[in-house]
Length: 559
Image (cartoon, rainbow, N blue to C red):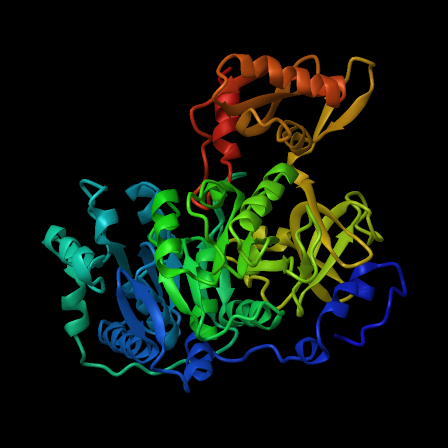
């Protein structure tokens, strides 16, 4: 382990107690240089015969992966796409989508990754906003749009092109012919130009949109250095991603964790098993079939593990997660099931966001704490600052989480005001303001305890004003096993200024409402008494599978 000194100042960002977990060679590792393509290619040059992708039974080697990406890069160049141009992509994680992302990266163009669940009019807004030269859309997504007439050249990505076996035959036979769009085969056939490789570390590589649960989605511009550094930090942090191992990838590329995990697999030489969507039964079948060593999930899809009917998960050596708050009860239930089914990993919770290229802290099998989001990655520093005056706080004191790391975004696309507001300059260094409330303990473990934007002032019955934290109510209600899911939003109130509204999913029906009100009354101050309790069949979620608070707030305002 590192020779890092013990606590000296009482300030986590100065002492960096988490560094004691990492060997000196990890702490002193250089920040990666070059493009995503060159970084991954260099690291795999001695294992090109190994399997890079497993897609519907088709095993694609690293040789074919890089050759296919370069072939597509030549086609992109032949169609006039050049360094700095944006190309929009609406797709799930398929081999062709991966080739496209790396082909764009090869020539220095930018992949504008658009959510597959939004309306066609919104897609065109993102296309126009970035002045994209082309739009690529997965055929199965295009089928759902009905009449769609984009005013930019549009290429259809075929889902079944790289699939084999029965699935491949079915996908090819059922594929529609879109006469008004450019076929992928036709696009590839143009080879008049040879692509010139770009290897600039600080040039933009991708634009990923925030989930939009608290406002209009912003386009986070991520550079090659951002995405390379997060892949390297995860790989060297002691998690031992080895070339012969398999990784089950269930996140689409338009979610930052999908893109980052895809790049982690490609860089580290693991086999990336592609699951199109995080659907419980299909993912469970892939777990049984492929027996991957690594699986990343989140609280929203925890039932993939908790409802797993088989009795053997011994192949899992790394079960990591994040992307939202996880209750202590669910964390322990996951670990109970994992232990019962002989998995060699507990649930290793982590923390990240689009703006930091995915992950910035994670628990480890040899060093973890319940309810924490783990230790910062080896090139990452966290700071907790006071919500009022911004001064740094000591251990176990709650304030806003600030991040300084090579994975922090370049800025928000064409939005200088949002970019400026996202950063705080401290002693000449650029720190990302997360908007999350948290703390760091003496061992360096980080905890996320709330959101700044979800703090409200309430006028209590005693005549005084208090701070109301919806997450506190959610954590209280998460202790009720009768609730499958719950969320709390706040609406304006004439007497109390702010008043909670509870949304819940429960098989109990109407009797769940009384249970919820009694629990809040028993455990929390009276100003947490809800205006109403609303029962839902399912909780609305964003494209990144987080609770869609924006949608719930709209429902609450109608009450």
